[in-house]
Image (cartoon, rainbow, N blue to C red; front, side, top):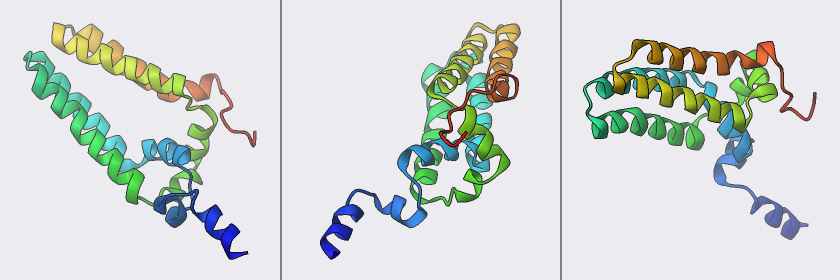
Length: 148
């Protein structure tokens, strides 16, 4: 009996055991943690300003490093259960596919490209695209949830 328990336990990381979520769930729900959202929005705007001045290395550093660090910390240590059970958590579980995540990234590329080119219309289009991706589940609910 103990051997089968130990074998089963060995399939999970310490984080999964401590928090009770699998890696895929943690990857999904960390996206809606307030710290992650604030970090992503703030660094996207700050990096956009730096792209405007054509300092590519600094812009990429500001745009990526804080977001990656916050993601790593949240994935490792955060209790994401409250986000999984929230209305926002249920919303992203239903619609946030890899395709939507890729579309959000495309909006960021457009936003930063508009900053580099100093085209406010492209910046606005990129921001609107990202927002539309977050709201896509309201207009066109795609079920990513096997329980639905």
